[in-house]
Image 1: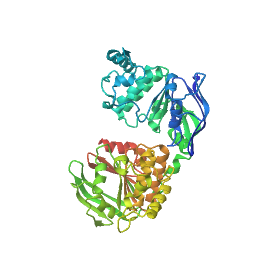
Image 2: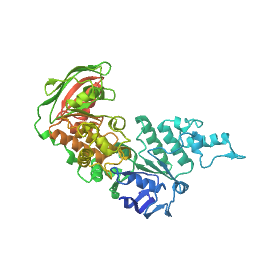
Image 3: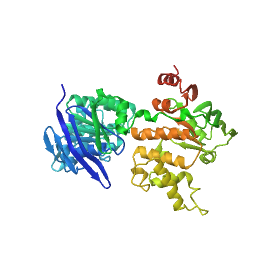
Image 4: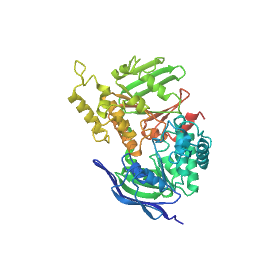
Length: 498
């Protein structure tokens, strides 16, 4: 028997300068279910969640809760109506105690002084409601892990009888075990008839947690489906507006080019040992392995970031001495690092400046002053080529989504015009639409004759894109699989040594 509609968005519209973020959205959600809002970055899912939580006010449309119309002027009114939100970026007061955060709007006092005993008792009761009594209520919130800070947010909402909880990318900063604990808590909230809105781009989470899903694209509803009635491939197709199979790699149909990179007996104490392989133009060589297997360390050694590495690196058949990244660049090697925020971008700089960081010598005059016309040409070319979603290339890199930040890192790599590209976890933490675009780009680069060394922890990505796969375990190569041989079971066995 179908559950009755409890929460309704009816013709909700929200405009920001220059963009319609949410466009005439109508959705019905049953009580006590976990309903996912999914879509590419910029699809409108977070905006819709913030409208429900009173953070944004809609320009049109109506919200109904349990049959009653609501118009929230701010987050406080939404909270009084039983709506809480667990933000991707936590928004409590880190310099205050857990207890003070939990009771901020209703601090127990006596004669104008905070009653600490009542404060601690009240806050502990709220934590007990969600099984989080292990949290020390006397500690400053900023001393807690991100996972425990999230629990405090949830405890505050549940402790104030929230009927609806909005989760906005809640696992973006959590470990695997912390994520699973959050999932178990959401299951418990559902059992208490609390309705959960789950905003995410992570497919496994949606299929693990959610009862139904609404797909948004460009601010509009593409469709709403029961999770039991849809596959992951179909959901991706709804999100990006094209067939998932459209990204089947094309480079594998072309003949490989000449050998561009050869590594012979490369070792680094405590990191990897006796690694040898060859990589030709037009090939994507995948590196598989568990965390700590030595893949990233190998990439850094090839790029000149490991002064303890010993062995031979040959470029176009000639041995190259690479002891720093500048020498790698001079030999046509570019590394797209695993951590785009720490090592790939200068977040305080704008998109154009970031794209041109790899070619400063080329766009500067004899006095080392950057030529504006050259900067505009390079930045504009790769900004448009990679379809970075931003109002202009003068926007701050910090303000962009994860997928668009990753596109900037790749734009910087393309601007360097290197023949050998090392790409470390190119799609970690980005939405499925940007992921498909980056897969297509990597395939195009190989198709254009570049040699690509691809490191990824996502086996489907690695298996689908790679020409061949090397499997690492404890710093050593444990096996090599051709594209025709590779499947998840074989790769996992080699990774685990079984």
